Length: 429
Image (tube, rainbow, N blue to C red; front, top):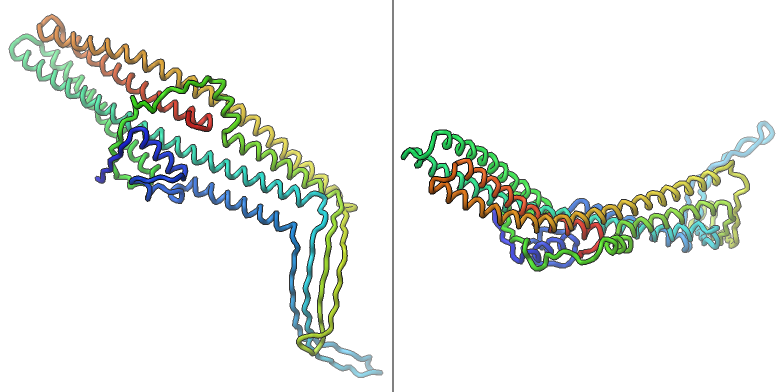
């Protein structure tokens, strides 16, 4: 199984994040973690390119359009009036070449609004891509944390297994000399069997989390990364900003909300463009052609330059229906943005309070852990001198394992919730 070692603690995690954001970055993962390896990011990039292509098309609609056509056709005609004039068939070749030029002078606001709409659509696609990248960064960060947490819980379970196994041997020795009873052995064996089940689950959790991380980083799934711990790093600090400040920042800079505003602008421009059908259009046109029979190239020529105005007098309600549809789309987009804004405020507040809770739980768990460690050592000492029971030792060990588990989980919850808060706000706090 391939092993790869990482250094730098939380900085390594930040390097992963930088790579996933498609920023410049080096290291052993620089060659494998690219945007083309991540389908969701590649899809977002394709959507941005598509929006820019539509913008170019909208810009091109303002320019002149020049076309050329050439015709060569064998032609025959029949003349005569039987029986007075006998029928005669005339055959000849017809040649024609033509240039046509058109330039829109006034579109009733249609072209202008379509151009503004495509500008807004480019912004929407770019902000969607930014949010996709940040979500990928969050998923990778959380998986990184899950790997570290599961590894620490595995080490804890392994230590608990070793301690219980050692205690079982001690109980058996005491049973041989007559200072322990058979039920003590059975109780210790049952406890060891239960811990064995937990050990199997903990090993599997480590493997699954490592597989997920390798998949996100586009590494071979069999790679065993030696990840440094990030709990206790000076870089991990609880943000000092208040929940109101976090909400204010999210409403101002979060890419989803910026994209939502651009979506409203796009729908509004589409609504205005739909009303252009009620206005006249003015186009400058010109053509030049030359055509002749039985002579190539033809020499007879014609040309024309003029202005063409078009005004829709009767359309049986077609434009009215288009305006109503675009207005409904605008109202739907505005309502969807309002819901998105409400959801973002809720998400930020939930992430902030979860982070505060995790920090408080970490402090409380540390105090309980110190007491559980003292209780376990006292129970062992009492059992060794014969004034404590086997049950006291096993109960104290179970309480210690639970306390250490709670402490480990609370510490990683702090880091996990900080990452979630940063994603909800739209920047690292």
